[in-house]
Image 1: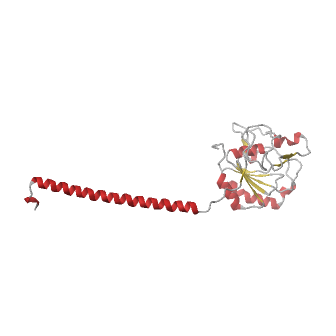
Image 2: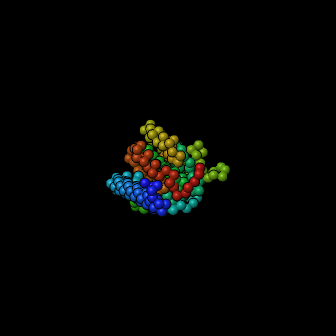
Image 3: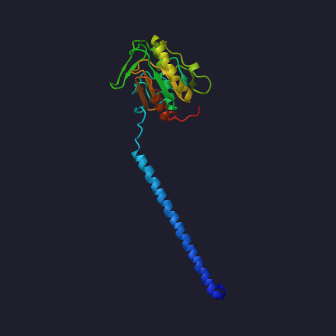
Amino acid sequence: MDEELSRYQRRKLDKARQMLARERGQRWQSGLRLLFLAVAVGLIGYFGWRWLTTPRQPKSGEEVKEMGREHVTNIKDVVYNSNPPTSGPHFSTWAKKGVYDRVLSDGYLIHSLEHGYIVISYHCDEPESGWVRRVLAHEGETVMPASDSAGLDPLYSMTFKPEGKMSVFTPDKAPEGEELPSAFEREECQAVVEKLQPFVERYERVIVVPRINMEVPIAVTAWGRIDKLDEFDEERIERFIKAYHNQGPEKTIE
């Protein structure tokens, strides 16, 4: 039949066929776009609904108001707003990861917190030990022990002199400290240390350290955060570490 048509009629017929094909293609593309749009809207709505209806996991620990990041060489007159402290004036030297066998000055530990470390402090003695001051944050009171200033130097002054360029120490080269009370040598206390040791092995920036005059057996601190535990709770400590590990205000490559 096409052969019987004139050349002009054949061109018109071809154009009509092309237009029809384009219209079909456009309708197909429009249909696909509408389908994709409907699927996208459905997915956004579904995940939005899931996000709104999923119970939120509360943040680990409690927030503590920041006290600044000043470098000092003596913290004798500083009253921190938590025990252990989570921020504030501190030394230019800091402690690296590890399990420490002596009390470290807050001046070192706060600097570690600034670098994103998690400090796990454990307490195995009765309160009111003689050589460490007790900070009563809720009363704004500082109770000083009956001791001379020389005896306080390891806790209040930056006595450690680092070797080399980095102002840092490790458990095997830690600053000298006072002898711990005998309660820290008890089997029960050493069992707590053994339970805390794996956190140091699993994470790059975790410190385990004994602490005198702490109102709870275990306290976990990060920069601006604290969680106080009445007993060892692996899941709770793990949750805190995952939330705040390497999240300090000063980013470092160590």
